[in-house]
Image (tube, rainbow, N blue to C red; front, side, top):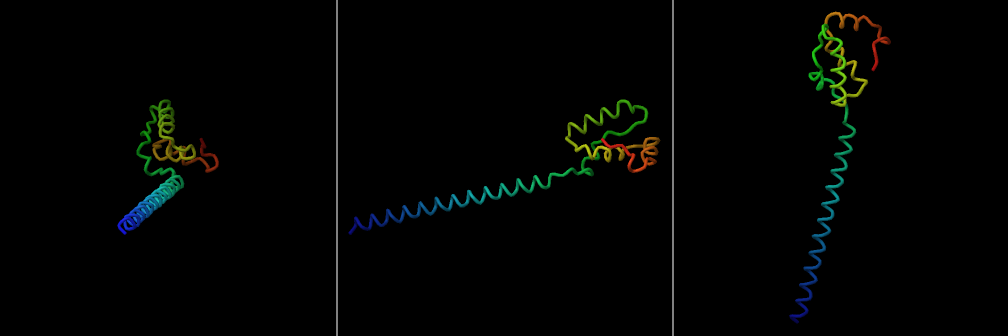
Length: 113
């Protein structure tokens, strides 16, 4: 009789271990699915926030135009700014004659990078 009880007890322990293992596997699967969803959401939401980056655009100075554009380009490349946004970023800091000239250009003539 005691031997049967021992066997039953061992079987129950084994079943309990199997259930715990299954539960652990299910938890891991759920975590993997969550991580996968998060990575998909991040890739979909990877957009360029111009408002957030505008403060990184160097101040424009008409006296140093020859140095300004290479400096801007270096910053834009280092920060991986998408090229279609470069003109938006640039025009936001134009002052004086540069701002006048840019605003006077017809939309189709405004430079594209």
